[in-house]
Each structure stands twice: as C-alpha cells, then as structure tokens.
Length: 322
Length: 249
Image (tube, rainbow over all chains, first blue to last red; front, side):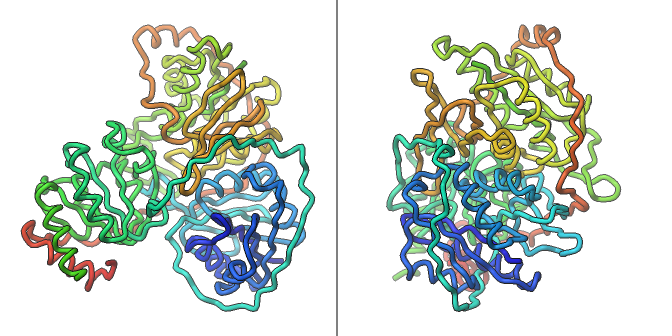
C-alpha cells in the first residue's frame, strides 16, 4: 500500500504548492501507516527531484518522456494510473489547479476511485474515509465519505502548511509505455505570463473593484502590489468592463484564491466575490461605504475613498521599507 | 455536427445557504434555482457557434440529470436557444453517478462536441466533464477560455498556471470550460420563452449505478473576528497591525 502524489513541475522546477502536496500526502500516509511515492512527469534534474524528499516522499518516480512534452489529459491519466497500480496506491493526491482538474476525474473513472476535490484538511476519519471539502462556493464545507477502495483527493492551494519531514528518498527513472494513439492534444501556441507574481501562487494579493472608478486609476494599486511583492486582482465588474484582464478576476466564476493577505480596494464584497477570496487568511478592506459587506469578511478595514487612501498607503509602505 | 451541453441546476449564487434537518443537505425553502453559471456560458458559446453557419452545427442539445423539480431550469435553457433537451430522471447523487448517466446517453446519440462547465457552484467538484470523457474514452481539454472552429477543426485556448496554450484535439471530444468562454450569458427573449414550451424534452430513466461518494454532514465556515477599523488618515497603523499582529507583511 502507498500514498501516491503527482507533483507537477513548471519548466523543470517545483514550487511551494508542490511541497504542500507532498506535505499533505505525508500527513495522509502517517494516518494510514504507509509511505509516500511522488510522481514527476517531465524533465526535472535530480537535485530538484530530491527536494520532494524534504517533505516526506520516500520514493520519487521520474518520467522524462518526449511523448509527454505536451500536456494531454488522456495520456497523463494512463501513466499515473499505471504507476498507481505498480505502487499499490490506496490514496492518490493531485493538485486542485487546472492540471489536476484535468487529470483527477479521468483517473477516478479509470481506477473506479471516488474523488474528493478542493480538500483543505487531512481526512477527518479513515473508517469510513471522510474528507473535508469546500462546497456551495465556500458558503459551506462538507464531510464527504468516499466509499471506493482507492481514493483520489485534490488539494486546494495555500490550504495546507508545509511540513518538513526529511526522508532518504530514492529516485527511480521510469519509462512507462505511452500509447501513441492516446496522444490527441496538439499544441499550436503558448503564451506565458512573465515577470509577474502569479495570482494563485501569491502570498499577498491587492485587488481593485468598481470603487476604483476608472482603469486610469490603477497605477497606485499596482505600485502597492509591487512594493508588497503581491499579485494584482480585480472584481468581476472590473474584468467585465475590460478595465483589467479576465485572468485577474477573483470570485465565484473567476479564480478562487487563498493568500495570506488579501487587500480589497473599492470592492463592496458581493457574495460571488467573497466566494473566491473567503479562504484568505487575512482580508483588508478599503471602501468608502462603511456598510459594505466586505467589512463583514475583513479583519482590518479603512472607511475612505480608495483614490485618497491608496497613495497614503503607498507612502507608508515606502516609509517602513526604508 | 451536434453539440451536447451539460447543465446543472444550482441555487442562485446570491442564496444564503441554510441547512435542512440532519445537516447533510440544504434547506431548499425559498431558493431560486438557476442554470449553473459556467454551464450558462457553455450554452451561450454553443449557440454562438451554431449561429455561424460556416461551423455547420445542426443542433445544440442540453442534458441534465435531475428530478422533475429541475424542469424550469431545462425550459430556461430551451428558451435561451437550445434545440432540445434530455433529462435523466434521477437524483444527482454524486459526480460519478451524473457522469455515468450522461456518458450512457452520449454513447447512443453520437455528439461531436460535449461542453461542460469547469465546476458547479454547489458541489464545486470539477469532476463531471473529465469523468464523461474517460467513460467515453475520448479526449478532453480542461480550463478552456475560448473555443472556435477553423476549417472544421476545433481551436481552443486553455489556461495553465502562468499562461495560456492554444491546442486542438480531434472530435469527438469534451471541452471543459471556464470564464471567458462567452462574454455574457445569453438571455431568453419573450419569443424564446414561448417557443421553449413546445421544444422536446426527452425523458430517460437512469442506468443502475452506485455513487462512490456521499455528503454525510455540512458545516458553516468558521466565523471571522469582527473588523478592526483604522483611520483613513493613518495607514501606518494598518501596516503596524499587518506586521505585528497578523504577521503577514
């Protein structure tokens, strides 16, 4: 028996989320009294792979196969399913990002394994196997029982603390057979975002709403984000108006994020917006309407006009950073 | 070409969720039910594709797994412009069950493109689309924010961490779509509402299959501490709290 964790890489590197996944898998493995095997697909060098061992993986299976250079949900599912059988995995941990969302449900069908997605805590019990899952867009959490022999869990980003558990991990290079007829995805173009903090990875997010009044008013918000090493985000009306790109939209139908600090500027805090940010550890609200619902969700608030408060806040950050 | 759009029936997104007795389901009293927001965008995009005659789309069918209580949501989809609908007459117990039922229908009806929203706003599982594709053994592309056809070939933009990829797969396939796929959901016009009444809704009894998961309890998120207010002229105090109390900057 084992716990299998799929660790995605980005241009050969892991990120904090990868280590959160391994930390979580190690926590589950301890409950089950078993070990963690990590699976990596792509060109990742040994020193990078061995980092997974710092969080408790005892075995790291590395697959570097040119046929898998383009992400294809069907062929990735086949490879992970094959390894899960070899490793006799009883629980499979995958990220709840777009890659994980593409693989996990397919794997669920392939292995007849129940899926619990958007998990943020260790299982609540083993008999029956019960996990804690976000539902109703954050307005409720479910205790979900998974009844199949194999369980697949997708972990929400920034929801599980890193736990260092140094293990002497062995790295195994594997070259499983890839059924060429399954490789259906053809990549025609890639557009990478460069030099910006990714919204889903960011520890701090500065977000603007309709209270910003005009797209021309964004420079002080961006400056604040830059000073804090934060990502920028926005509310739905702002992206719908085309003031900001839709990738920045946080909320129920946009991105669901869980940073340590979310600074909402000129955002009233509609239910749909809160659905995307309610897992933030701290929320700061700056809004001219003292009755805005955002203050119900926030721990710290400033009642005031965003255009007047932002420049002062920028100056204050510059002052403390001196 | 035929398109199948999968729709889920969910509480209106502004609903204050209350639990029913037993705390394992929601109290449905007074809830307004709507088409899941991502599915509404899927349907809108499917209709836009059909509107362009070059694409050669003969029909847009919607499918829903649910009881008769979902009929108004299905009629709304027809009023928006779907040509016909299929309802699998069963309680949608979990993603596995729902995907199994839809796949069974799709095996018989031969759709070229199946569109699913990336998640439902009630269960937030992000599961049904991927599961359908695996039950059918066909390609799936996830997190799709744009889809069009070029010379009969589907061209999609999928969102990845830190960027976008333009990809294509051969039909039949499942597109699992997210925000951006259509600008705004199409709204039913009065004429659409009238016509919808006479559009066919095919009723199908479910295939016997056991769900793999079950919600045994629901709980509310932990309440947050009351907001501490800082004077608008004194942002330094806010930074002090963030540095020394919250320890987040």
